[in-house]
Length: 141
Image (cartoon, rainbow, N blue to C red; front, side):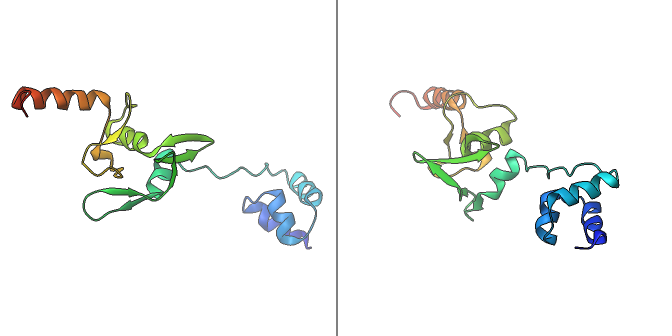
């Protein structure tokens, strides 16, 4: 393979392994040329954020709700990001409220499968809503 082809890919920021595979040469040769040109090692692309990964797995349900198109674990919508498991509703809550939720996060809109950030509630929010409800309607309601 021509040295010029290797140099062109090195200047694009490609990894030694990528270049060696694409041009059917050895990584040793690519490394040597990189060293000769005093080019830095290739860096990996930045991974997407947790919010971006969450957004990529939601689907507009067209009725104002968001459906989860990602994985489920034990019946809950989940997302694995950077090796850590997250529940979709906890991510949605953090997106909407800018803080970590306290206790379980549930869809407060009546659609059990909804993961819309404005539709999820944590335990203190539900406690407040229940208190307000009982203050308005009493125990008979």
